[in-house]
Image (cartoon, rainbow, N blue to C red; front, side):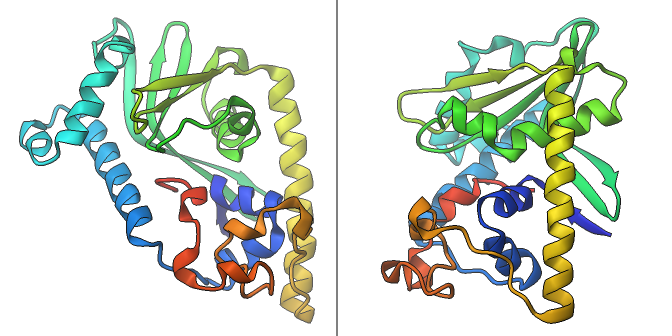
Amino acid sequence: MARLAQSQLDWLETCPRQFQHAYLDCLGALPNPAQQARRDWGERFHLLMQQRELGVPVESFLRQDPQLERALNALLSPAPELFAPQANTRRAVEHRRSLRWGHYLLSAIYDLLAVGPDGIQIVDWKTHLRPQPRARLAAAWQTRLYRYILAETADCAPERITMTYWFVGAPAGPSSVRFDYSQQQHAQTGRELQALLEQLDAWWTAYRDRGVPFPQVPEEEGHCTACRFAARCQRSPQASEPEASNWASVGEVAP
């Protein structure tokens, strides 16, 4: 059974050939030092929030990284509810859920789930240097898939599910974007998943049986200049060196 997370669905929807190279062909490239440093910091921040939620002392951890301490302290003012215990609320960190869809297993890793009388809140930490636009987040498969899997696997109506992204890496300080959910959105996401995975079946079968490559995104859409496979696809010569790949587009921590 093939396991698919939000990153694979994003690849499929943006450029099926990217999905082929990254997921089926297992190709990749190393990020440049600056990008790797951002990824490492993002992983440390996620570990910090996990340890803090579990009650593990983090003082020595913070002393080793003043930037982490500043990011944590900056969250205390705008979002005290993220840290103060709430009555009748259960919380889980790095919580994994899966949903079987035919011969695929859709998976999600939730940074924080808060289950209370009013419903379930999904909290996701983002360590990008700049907050992402709301429209881009709304279209991202993480937003769609995480809410969908939760509604399908938890005893909770879609209207009682919210998802909040907290951007903690920006120099200007933390900011958040919240998305509500509805039965109408849930049904729409189900239709989108069905169509995308049926198309994946067709592409995968043609690739496996006849060696037909997955389709490429039209070059004029502008995705190729930031893709680590641009040279392999004979596009964007300026991206021909692996070190020039833009791993920031992949996300700071992908499940």
